[in-house]
Length: 132
Image (tube, rainbow, N blue to C red):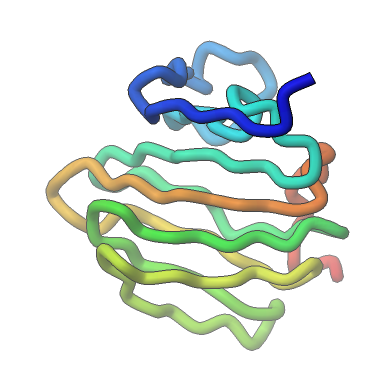
């Protein structure tokens, strides 16, 4: 068993989620964590064309950290009724703890790229933050 893995982002297949039934949003992703064999964290690179977004949602258990690699984004963050909008460009990090609403939209004119890390890595589908 190998305890490490090294690969380049270009070696990870880019998946068009619009072709995967029942998996919103319809964006492209590279599931880097899966390709590396990560077991304790989910690591995904998300690609956003201008105007595309991940809608405001929350997770029951998963904590997520995001990092803007390219593009200009508008973030919607916070508990339902206390949401704030924040501008984010390259080099910006943000954190969404469990049960805290978060979403982001590419407001720029170019393709945007966001790195997302989530733990625990199990499927924790988005829930309506207004119901928490």
